[in-house]
Amino acid sequence: MIISQQKPSSYLQSKLPNYQIKTRFDFQSVNLALNQEWIELDLFRYGLAQFSAKEFEEAGLNAEDRYLIQFMADQEVSHATVLSNMLGPRAAKQCKYKYPFKTVKQFLDFCQKLTRWGESGVYGFLSFLENPNSAQILSQSIATEARQQMIFRQFEGLFPMPVYHVPGIPQAWAWTLLHPYLVECPRTNPYIEFDIFPRLEVLNNPDPFQTDPRLPAITHNRTSLSQPGRQVKFKFDKPGKVVGPNGDYKTLTHSKTGRPKFAAWASQYNVTYSKLDQVNEDSATTVQPFAVLFPGQVEYPVINGTMFVLLTDTDLHVTPSNITALNQHIVAGPAIYQAD
Image 1 (cartoon, one colour):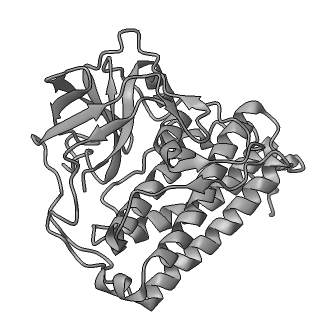
Image 2 (tube, rainbow, N blue to C red):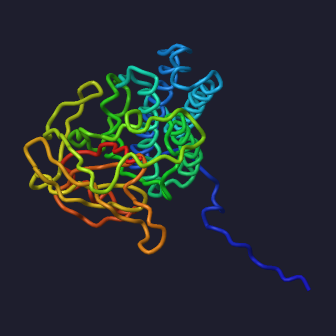
Image 3 (tube, rainbow, N blue to C red):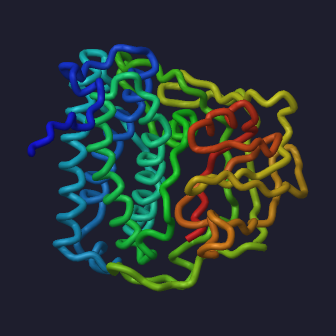
C-alpha cells in the first residue's frame, strides 16, 4: 500500500522569491557588506600590483599562489555585483583606500585580518535580515570569504582553522574596524548609519612573523601565539574624533561612565571578560583569560584564532543573538587580537 505523506516545507517556499532589498535595516546592513566587498577587491589587486614576483617568492608564494589571490579578486567582482543588484541604484560604489603594509608578509597578514571581520560582520546580521531571499544570496557569497580567510592564514604559516565556531559581530564592530581604510568615497554613496566606536590598539599584539615564523603551508601544528596569563597592553582614543571616509563621521560611545573596566574577548559563541588593570585616560592592561567552550569536554581555549577584543564598562552576559546589546557599554574597540 502506498501511503501519501506531505513533505516537510516552509511557508516561505510557497512565495515567489523577490531579492530586492527594501527595509532600512536590510539596506544598511547589506550596503555595509558591499563596502567590505569593494575594499577586498581593491586590496587583492593592489597587493598583487604592489609587490614583485621575487618579493612574493621570498615570502614563500609562487606564481600559482599569486593566481589564487587573483581569483579571489575575481570572486569579489561577483560579490559586489550581486549585492549591488539587490540594493539597487543607491548601492555604494568603490572608494579610495589606504593600507597599513609595506611588505608581502604584512599584506598577507592584513588580508587575513580584514577577511575575518568581513566574514564575522555578515554572520552578525545575516539571521536578522527581513528578506530571507537576499539573506540566501549573501550567505552564498560569504561562504567563499570564509575560505579566503583560511587560505590567507595558510599563506601566513598559521594553523588554518583553530576554532570550532566562527563568531558573528554587530555591524558597528565591523564598521569600526573597516572605516580607517576608506579615505574618500563618492558623494552618492549612502551614509553608513552604524556607530563607529573609539579606536583601540593592542600594543603587544602577537606577531606570527616574530613568534616561531613559518612558511606558507596547508597546515602547521605550531605552538599558540598567545597563552592564558599573558599581559596584554591597550591604548585607546577618546570619543568625538572626526574620521573618514570624507571626514563625515565621528567616533562615539554610549557608555554612561566612559571609563573602561573590562576587556571583552569575542570568539566562537562566547564573550569572555577579564578585568582591566592600570587604567589611565588612554591606556590599560589586562591578563589574557582562560575559558573553554564546553567545560568538561575538549579543553581547548576560546581565546583563539583571529578574534576580537573590546574595552567595556561592564561584564554584560550576551549570546550570539543579542551580542549587539554590548554596544551600549563599549568604551573603545573592537581591535583584532591575533591569539593564534
